Image 1 (cartoon, rainbow, N blue to C red):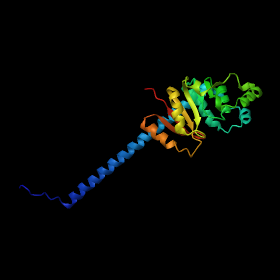
Image 2: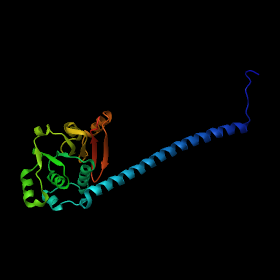
Image 3: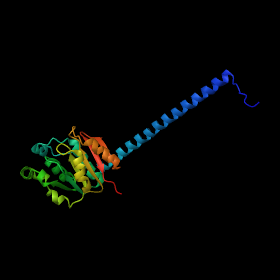
Image 4: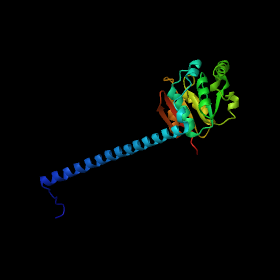
Length: 234
């Protein structure tokens, strides 16, 4: 008869309600399981990629991996962390970078090591290097200097394109470093900033700009914290 309601017995109502709960729980469980599975696969993939990177570094660097000239480090009075410097060397090897620019002061030791350990052209800004100290190092430790460094003025640098820029934000804020040097990079080049200054007020603005501009970047920690910014190939 039209308009007549069908009344279910209590047991049927509870059965229907229980089924709905079971379906909901199963759905949530499946979602969590899927998320867990994806993360597990990503972790496995990341581990495999890390193993591959380490193998590639070993193949390219061999016994040289992890060996640094500590007498030269003492001479320059450098405070750079060993594994931070090793990570720079590995980045040059893994990406086959040919032209590298160091942009901060008090980086004579880093300059010398990158020249010693890699075949890349290493550029230094004229105003950032202590020439007298550098020349003394060359005289006292000739075994570490088998080629001349490429010292350029700021004006000369405008005519050069590089694959890699190495910097830290101790004296120049990170956003200023990005604005000054990112456009000097070749396609697929990289700007690496060591984040020494924890009070860098521009860092949040830099991250916001990178996200809005869809510029690839990665925050990572070796001994120190770094941001890697890639100039993608459009």
